Image (tube, rainbow over all chains, first blue to last red; front, side, top):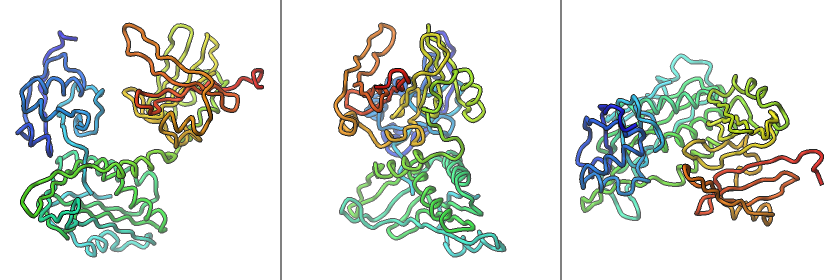
Length: 91
Length: 304
């Protein structure tokens, strides 16, 4: 699938993931080979030390695709928005 | 019926009055209010900041509320969650449930709080008296509280896999299609499979027989299957590790080796037990956590 076209994605970061990446939101051009949430984490980690540090313990980071909770194996095909955050602590 | 996220405080009395005004079908109103504790990890705090994911928060609270309304006959419900800067003693969250009778209102209020705590995208940051900020960690006890509801028999179709054994796999497919939205039929060489991803279950018909003779229940969420519910797992529902399994069912008869095929990840290893005539393979990960249970029920002529 390396020939798949790149696609544009809005990425949001919350709580300490936001603090470590140093940004709350960004628009990125994601290579077509990035197909799942787990692929996206690997790709983000390669973008710089702040991302490598934010996603260092990627097993504790949760994700949402188009505002619904998603597993690492979830596809991001056709998604508009992906968010990364620590386990939620509301209530 | 209503969900709000706001910076402003709420007034419990006013919210209940407006929810129940003019209603005579309500016999029970239960409210829960969560407030900011002045202490965290044995140290006083001076402030708490609540961050959220606008859009998803409302969507998730709507989903949680819809789930509560599907499970209990609620006449009215309300969730209000505050965000922004809060201080010790301030209100954080309000849940109101109203029903004709108290049990539904009590249970639905507890369910809403348990689900909200593990699903709604809010994050708390506490500021100590020295000014240092600490993000609050999620608590495992909250996840366990939520899991309790998830494993409770869902309204609708109780799915006891045993009752499908010995039936033609195509007939079971036709029957389950109505109640199970995500169902997949696969044929691999001489075996046929019926995969029920959301129920954490597959049925198998071996050797071109076309008749279900074994099934597998997923005890743990995996990339492919969700965890099977209590109505599916039955007596196995409370067993989490291979050691717990062995403590309950005695020593294994045999081990199940991990199989390595070049193009795929190795299959899980496990232990094989004979339980009431059925052969049950308990497959586990490297840490000893149960992942799935494969059951080959006893055939009448093989019974001891």
